[in-house]
Length: 275
Image (cartoon, rainbow, N blue to C red; front, side, top):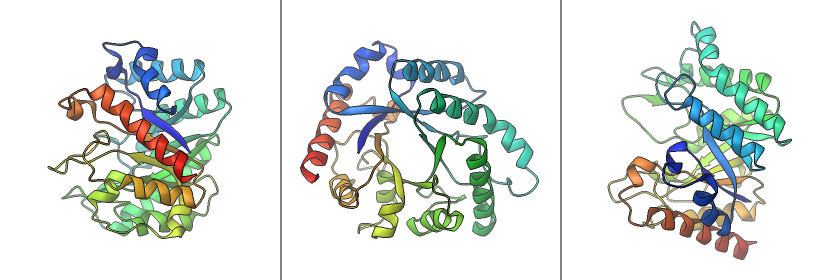
């Protein structure tokens, strides 16, 4: 089990890359993840940082675009060519860097969302995943468990739906991205069954505050991440656990950088004991 961090150029405004990452590495971090949004203000900086980190020897994973206008809705019908064109630069970068680091990279994907029928959005998501599998043979697409965001229907709003899509496509490189914070927000009180746990190939971890805002360091004790990681260890989970922090929201946390390093230390200690 590798511990990782979702890195963004804005984290490095006051520190160099190595200064920022050193406390995390000392506490057990070994991999990075980059969220790729082509044709946005951050794209050039993010692309350069990802390439720099791969060249420096970091094992890197990637998150496909998901913020508006990036959406899979319509992929199975009239919007296929347009959506392919939008996503192509991100997929091309992920594939090229996976090849450069001589290691398959996880590529996290959000399912389609819209005010539409769930079955229609599932078709969009499944056909998009098939296309990604064909276009990026060095990546491992991961369909993420998502929390509810009314008024939209989002593909992947339940453990059952995410697992059913992954099993229906029956592709060895395709897995589940289990977001532990989203799992908590969905109201699950019990652990997933072993079928789900064994389909998980990538994990996002973060805590939730009292206002049910997500993507904080592991400081509030609301997300039962200890129980979740023990369950993954029990089934021999082979992937990464990526600490995913919203820098804008979490900036009000005192000693934020230190609290993130502490989060890694707590995860490392638990994984070592569970192993």
